[in-house]
Figure 1 (cartoon, helix red, strand yellow):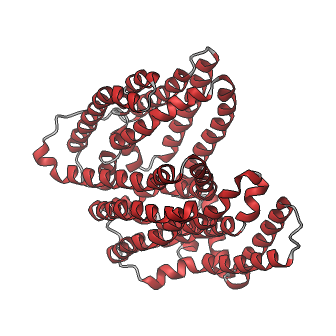
Figure 2 (cartoon, one colour):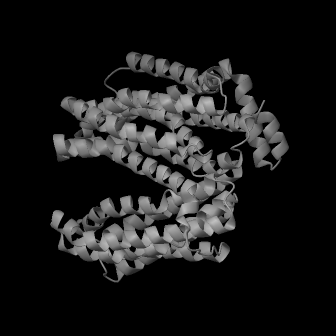
Figure 3 (tube, rainbow, N blue to C red):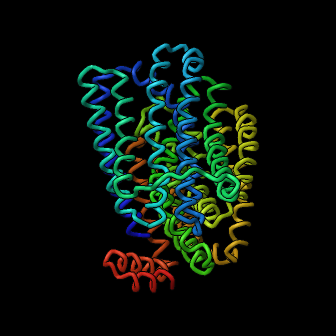
Length: 485
């Protein structure tokens, strides 16, 4: 798993760096209008793309007893869904363009519907590669995809294709992944016997509804902020969300991308599931908890130092979102585990409950501005995680004390770090420039956090370091012995 995460990280960060560089080039060639048209199209296309990819792939990964015939039948179901979404997109293209009062959007949506046809030939093959734990190959495919997408976008932007250059880039991306996955996994198609696929289709439906529900309540805060508060508060809230979540999510997503396949492989081995969950939670908490809490307590100086005084409205929501992200960073692994071991139904109902509770909480919180919406995350989200914790603990026979032991080192060290930073802010003169205060806070926070870990949790830290060294040295036995100690 560690090597899979490493390959995933290499591919993701390579693609991200190339994307940042190409964005600078393309932004100089295109206009805000061009990006606006694609932004409007993405609101619909991203949701439809989620629907086309989720569900079937989850079933292929999680259901370990599928026969080749059943996988081929699911491949056909995925193809049918993709063609159906392409047809629906063509039908809705005109109403959506009228809703946004953007005539070019109509043609963009029509042409972009081909993306679903390309994706139809990669959904199941990619899931098969994940099931086979071939993450090195998947990382290579993803890197190739990113390079070709960026090259196509820059080339056509230079040739004057305006917003079509972005569409061509996306289509190149989908076609590349479909072609490369087909080269390695030539998954055949078979006419589905729906009567015999009831279990698989029920699981796919549950996983799909879970993904759509998460997408809905994850974006509901932006909808409420824009509808109730207006453009400027929404802009402040968007920046606060980006700063608070981006660093932590970049780290957590690297792990979340590979864990379902490994949890599925171990789904009948409760001791190993407990070990994986505890070690992953502990490793994530060591990085994400101090990062998110540090963002929260340094918001007063972080915002003016990085963004300038005009973004003062970011400070309030950023403080609260930092605390929320600290909780979420270690909890997101739970639904992944449950879905991978075949309990997608419970995850579905928990996600649907959040889809009801969270938007109501955002609306109530909006009466106190963007800070109120951020507070809704910090207050309402943790109780929504309680059923998932209960279910996971029950399914893998994990005791609360064991889980607490895994998160306590990072949590206690982060608390000491927070106290040290607050004391430093109190003792330092308020006349210092924000950039100076931020530098001092980062120094104090880093020293106090590392010092607390070495002073109170030295043995555990050294065990984890030795485990990582064992993995890097490609000595799996040594790594397992150290990390499982």
